[in-house]
Amino acid sequence: MVLAAFRSDFYNALLVLHIALAIVGFGGVLLNGVYGAQAKQRPGPGGLAITEANFFVSTKIAEICIYLVPIVGFALVGVSDGVFEFSQTWVWLTIVLYVIALGITHSMIIPSAKRMIALQRELVAGPPPQGPPPQAAEMEQVGKKLAIASTINHALLLVIIILMIFKFGGPNV
Image 1 (cartoon, rainbow, N blue to C red):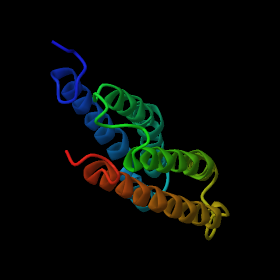
Image 2: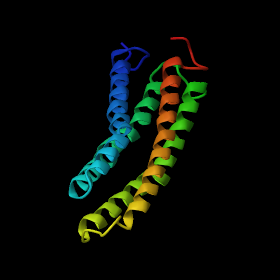
Image 3: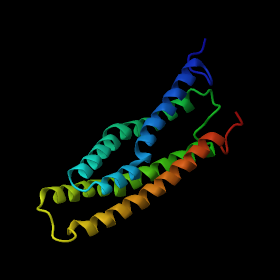
């Protein structure tokens, strides 16, 4: 009996792991905008707590799963008995889009989220302002940057899911 073959128990176990990691990882960050909106509705310590908790889950739990998704995906290609190959359009294009999304995450989303937390901490630590706080304008700009970058990443994820389902340039299995 071959342990590693397309649709073997081992292959299917890897596939379940791949999908579970994707659900926890990408699912863990897809609703970040909702958490941001909730934090905005709760100025002060409550909003800061929401933002910090969301950042923790995104960078300490979801991020690990997101990094494991392609590793398990590579294993799936490797144990597929040549059914899937890295030269197939859906495989290499998925990898390219994943790397682009990681670049957006590390160059825009994570630094912006860190800045948002710093601004919120300044607001919580300082005395109540007379009028709008000086951090408000920057927080609005950072929020817009987060929204744009996140929307791009959501679109990339949707394309990746479509590629994984339809397997363009791959076998019809």
